[in-house]
Amino acid sequence: MDADISLLGESKARLIDYLGEGEKSGGELSAMLHINNTAVREHAGALERMGIVQSRFVKTGVGRPKKRYSLTPFGVELLPKHYDVMLNLLIKKVWEKGGDALLSQLMSGVVKELADNTAREESMTLEQRVNRVVGFLNSLGFMANVERSGEQLFVIRHNCIFNKTAKLYSGVLCSECDTALIKEPIGKKEIELVQCIGKGDTSCRNLIRA
Image (cartoon, rainbow, N blue to C red; front, side, top):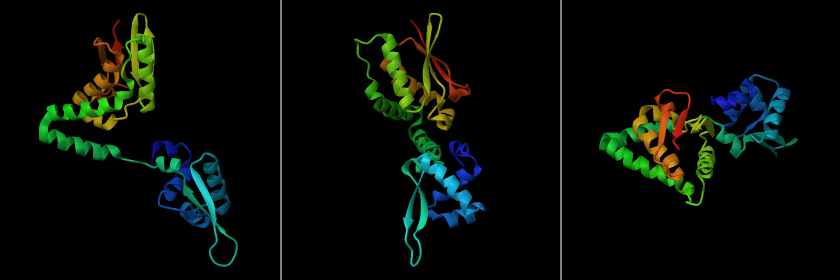
């Protein structure tokens, strides 16, 4: 079960999991969750207001139309996904074929393509370039911010979107990400990765030397 879904509470999280299998009626959800129909309506209603679940009435034979529930596109995105398993296997095959050199070459191209829209403008100040990079990192999910400590300036990433993969291939992946996502857009060679999630630290911290 995905950590974000679990924060909604056990019943709502399980309801989302079951709807991940396809559209279901209130009665079906009631039987699966072992709760009454009123509780199902309350949980589903709360999730509808959050934009996670949607409902529609379907007429099946004689009688009143039955309400059926399904996940919205946003709700589908909350379901657990294990891209890292496939990514790790893919990278392993690349490494077996060409070692660090081939992996570095391919990873560099991928990350640079991601970073194309952060190409620096010479007219921008260092602070403007740093803030632009931080904004881009946040759009990718890195949870980044800028921190000043005396004369030192740091770009800090509290999340690694390649977390499990980075722990296996930190030497190549972290190096290429730092160069393409931070060093090149900011335009300074004197940028040092002083902490790294891929190497066991709680955040990735880049020191930008004046």
